[in-house]
Image 1 (cartoon, each protein chain N blue to C red):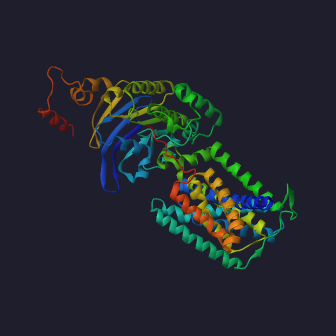
Image 2: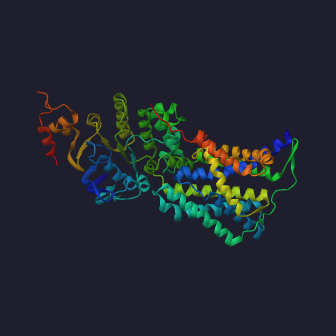
Image 3: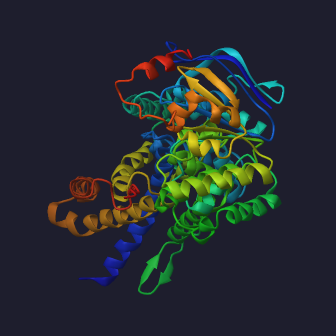
Length: 297
Length: 263
């Protein structure tokens, strides 16, 4: 077995996986806080990428500023969607909420098509293109930046939920809305914040994908579907699970692409995550890190 | 401090639970609200704290005034900010948060971060068992410790009025004594006014200044603790001591009739 090839696959897997992890984190945050499954998560990613592209091409400002502005826009989008579409649905059946987010994903996709067309648009090059040698293998700098960005964002998020007052209040709301109300927490505010955060992390994922691929198009929104095996593997309500799940699915995908595709003649890469999804559901229906209910005896 | 006059509460627009309830909680006192299951005690507390809304209930008539201000149907978060904090029935700690985090959430409405830390220590002084385990998940605490945490969490909000819903529920008798003594201490030292809902009349009388007995959504009887304790009906129905000269039997249906008389 060729070690360089294996390492290359692992690195590719980690990069793609870390982006999955980001999007899945957004998904989990919304699920935890509002118990809604947001099937428009992939579209959040796509919209984020297009916003950033727009800012970068129209105004000549540094990449990092563009990213921050994109974050602001995404947060606003998340809050507006929560306020106008999801809040009236509080208390209604989970299926209706899922259907609405599904509809939302079509609408967002259509809006982007309306504005930008369906062709692939080149994404400005932001990271230097010459690869860095790590041991025996060359790694593109974009990959390293991507992993760094994801790591920073994940650390920020974890400390937000662990140490900040609002983060802890959000977890309390996820634990019991009524008790949170009795503490004087504005549950509506917590819902809005979780949608904003979910939109921000997805947008980051979209921007990173744009820089790595060098161009963006509608297919970015398929990332939303990939998130399902990730969150099911990690457990729907666990952020750590989303991260581990993202990395595992990313590597799995690249392994099956690298080793199975030559054998079966292509396509294994696309199918592998969903095969994994079915297997996980058979053996560990709550995922690897799914919530274990504390029962006192 | 808190005055409820002729409050009516309706759930789901059809079920009338409180049928013209009036009560008064004077500042700095402990007032107990006693009564059988379904009398409307918890509903009364939820009407005050605004949590009714989350259960599809509303105050359809009458008024609830706190420090001279009408707080009917206000949002719970605003009521908490006014200084009323409800400790819900069944402890309801956030099980997947640590003890420390639970206390942080309790003080969510507070702005001052310096006295916030001091208050956490104060809570741990009241409940030393919580200090040893402050970084553990609160779901692993025993029932009594969870009740302590629930009360400590309420203290973090520095409320003027604390509403306690059955703090003795599901807790060993010895621990109940301890918790009630602590409630008394909090009342005297923190100057927190307390409205206490209880099934266990004995233990409630041991700390309260004034008591109301509710039946069928109304106040059936009220008085100072001494008056209540010496009342024959209260003795028989709530304290289980009765006349004492001869044992009552179930054939003696008179007692059930006597209960009706309060309506």
